[in-house]
Length: 189
Image (cartoon, rainbow, N blue to C red; front, side, top):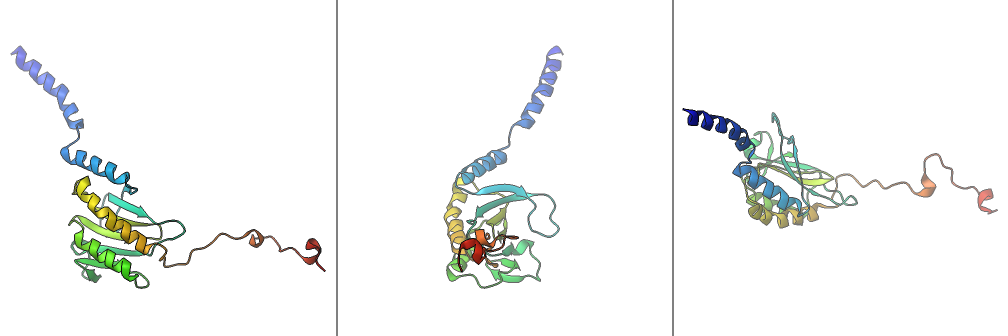
């Protein structure tokens, strides 16, 4: 009987340690995020741009250069989209369509990427700052790494194609509140 009590007490001591041990899925996600982050992709847990969605989802971002922002658009997979949204390609719908047609190289790269994405990829979004994929991380790092060149190609094709022009900083002579020099200050007559 004493041995049974000792075994039960040991189980109570070991059980919390087992709960802290990462699951195989968590180990795969950590390896995936670590590998992809080293490739220059930013990964954050955020609320995705989906209606009636509660909680957060992994967002993988490929940033545009600051001097060459990208266009605004939002594509949602049919499984999470309303029938009212305009169909685009390969089971994806525009929630926010680009203001002007995308260049042919970007359109080709986007369509090729949409055909290949895993079923748990729900949203592809472009803002002036970044190209973002919202997905549930169902694949291994090695498998997802095959998508990286396609995302980089798409980002490069979209960069500099912003919907709004870039605002440049004011020059030295065009600072607010500063008057341009007059003829007496410059010595001209």
